[in-house]
Length: 299
Image 1: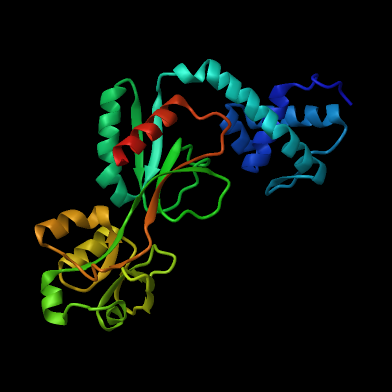
Image 2: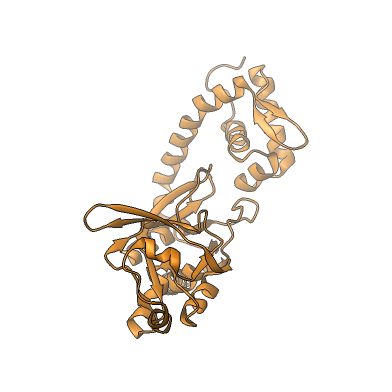
């Protein structure tokens, strides 16, 4: 057993990165080391401690009981060390390099691209790579600095910061409503042509809240289904039915009269706008700066 304080901090950091990412390869990407170097650090740490910290299989790496306990004890220490380093040198860091991020296609064009334009004016030395997709991508495998995600986050090992929120709006074209009639209450939606967005976890059940505090739930039957918010909005504009989209996608159409808000006295749960990062121990200056910039923009 080594004397207290004699364990190499790099080995502790390598071990913690493997536990957090679940593999030597992903840990190496986080730390800027090769897979072999990460494995060597962990092996030396196990020899120094005289215990097996990780169970290795061809598919995954998991901590042993002793490894889990050791990680729980040493992770706060590493965070304290890195926080101290950040206070000394990170606070004055200037954003540099390439900011690689992903965002939903609709929100990316509506909000992220304008924010990035302002951000690049402020930091012209930066480069940006934006991947617009409605799929939830693996940030570590894709080597993304961060993701902007909307809606409701599922539990994960990633770090997340809420930046803002949006309303969900029920709408249809004036032509459709003239032909089919204006719904008066949520239950009326079940009798209308519904355009379903299959990306949602529950695209056919909607829970409304009234101004009087009462709630109503309705299950709709789709006439059209699509996995694209842009296509859904186009179907709505063509007068093919009623659906729900975020306010940032509908505000311009409603203001121009291309679409009409339905059930304005009823509301659906608000969705969130989140910055999501890989669970790295030190957030880069470019990520911190963009998250702060975007938060201010959304305010």
